[in-house]
Image 1: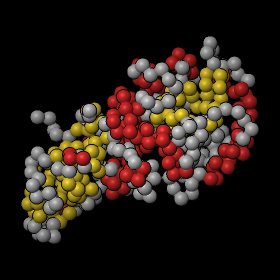
Image 2: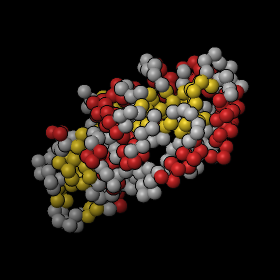
Image 3: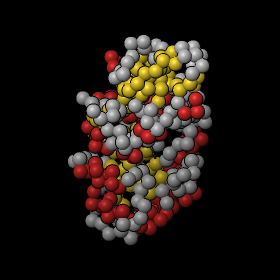
Image 4: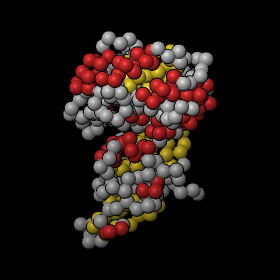
Length: 361
Ligand SMILES: *Cc1c(COP(=O)(O)O)cnc(C)c1O
């Protein structure tokens, strides 16, 4: 028998979550953001659940090719645009729309030979200071693009630094409005947090994490609040149990010591599977669908769990590290991420290559 760990991808949950994003912006078109291998779910595995999107946004050219190979004929947007001039050939060939965030990308486009003009998204740096042209340079860039025969339609775009937090979007939104109010073209402003928290629903919303069943603003809100379902499950089984006497410890560093006699389980899952090593004692986990907590340090291939709330648990019992458990139980990836001092995004993207992934039905 293979080691009992596996990940499951849930197409029905992806489709449900995409529908939630759509319901939050009924008049907008929705990009399903599938960068980083669909946030660790795998482009091919996520595609059946997300094909109802109006387009796919990503940044790796190989992933764009993968989508075309899956026969997706609709819009694909390269969120970072081209990395060098010759990437434009692929954009022409596969009809990829691309972000323009710097003057160099306009130079490449001006020198590019193509029969079909490109749809581009001109990106404003409205204050996040990662990608985009500053407001003072934005209009000149737009004018230059607009004069190029290589350019078809120009859409306008920006990205928020604080859509999930206290600062919100107002300041960056004002910068965007001031720089673009008299320019034509469709707008794309919102990521998941800006869509759900701030109701920003301009022409194209960019729905990333919301599709995968993680709350963009956890712990302020959880997936129950937003009506989302976990799209990835990481599950394994107990491969041993131990009974600790009071004063005995478990695992490296003896980081957990039993206060009284207790039964513990050893799970075939460790940091080499993508489980966060920084998750300390009491990180939530389900055993046979019952919520309990981890004990002590996570090691490379194993972790320990408290079996006190699940006296019937034995070798072979199902352990849900995150996602959907037996009997309709579920554990949000955000709960686990929070206990490990990180975010759901990181855990789903860090699922390790040694974990077999299956698509559930
Ligand atoms: C990743 C990304 C998104 C999606 O963000 P979520 O928080 O996952 O919804 C949107 N826009 C850009 C530019 C991105 O890079």
